[in-house]
Length: 162
Length: 162
DNA sequence: GTCCCTATACTCGGATAGCAAGTGTCCGAGTATAGGCGG
DNA sequence: CCGCCTATACTCGGACACTTGCTATCCGAGTATAGGGAC
Image 1 (cartoon, chains in turn green, yellow, purple, blue):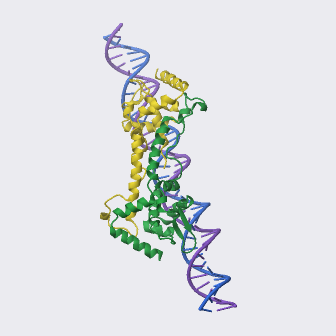
Image 2 (cartoon, chains in turn purple, blue, green, red):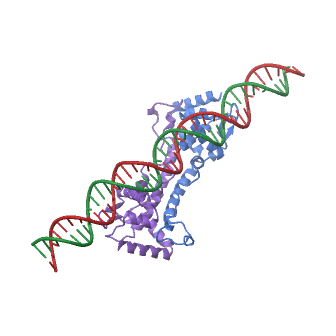
Image 3 (tube, each protein chain N blue to C red):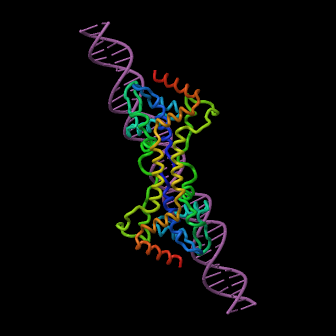
């Protein structure tokens, strides 16, 4: 089990985008250089966020990405589903229907016990991610980050948007 | 994010092994043919369970696998960690330490907010899996399965162990 | 009849190929901007 | 001086190679068993 690295990148990008004032946008190249990650590949994940409707794109010369809705209306779960895909981590292959003890398909009305147990765990996982929003990440970050780092980030942002 | 298919197989194997009476064992080949999965590959995952101490191996002619401890002492989380590996799904690459707003490593005392959010969700996930045991899976399965299927399984097991 | 020995057949265990998905990169289509030109 | 037009430079979007890890398989080392022989 492994979560795509792009999820982490996307979340950090959304945190940064939350600091961009209305009417401005950040290009994929800028987001990449701020985070020190390969630009073209980050663009791929930003496109996924765009398809999912989490960020809006602004075309043209001073274009780029901006949040499509308020930061407290974007949950971490939304980001995970957008970047990593909506497929659940555990997929039941119904192996109980194979082998010498198999029965006709009509005999299997309910999920198998293994599937139920995994589904319960995934619900708990999703719930935890759904109740955390990008706005929460921002406030958590502001609470713990060193003033020095925040100042540098703000200066970079101001200079880049100018 | 995708969980190895072997996790499902391993759980079903443990459920079946829970039905094996004391003093007997089931070979990997038998477990594979009961579940209709490729034998040599299943063996690989059974070895992982063996390394983790969840199942005990019996060598020799009438050998095979049996549970290493009581079914209510084996949690689903144990199985996931044994088969899928102990590495957490989300790995923080500390991208906040890169780019123009980076600071010396000493400035980063706490986990970043993204990392904390993912860690919370994974804790909820692990907790849900830890409180479900193989014994629970067995009783759930017995509750819902059709009598016909249970009879066939019991017959197969009796015939195989004889 | 009982015990011991040997050969056997079966078991697990790790090392070895094949394949799919994630990772990383590139170039083309489209658009807001900036400058130049005409009125 | 103001408005319009054109060329430009920048943006996103999807299509193309590469690497890592999961999937699938095989053969070798080790052991309890079953049979045969000796006492």
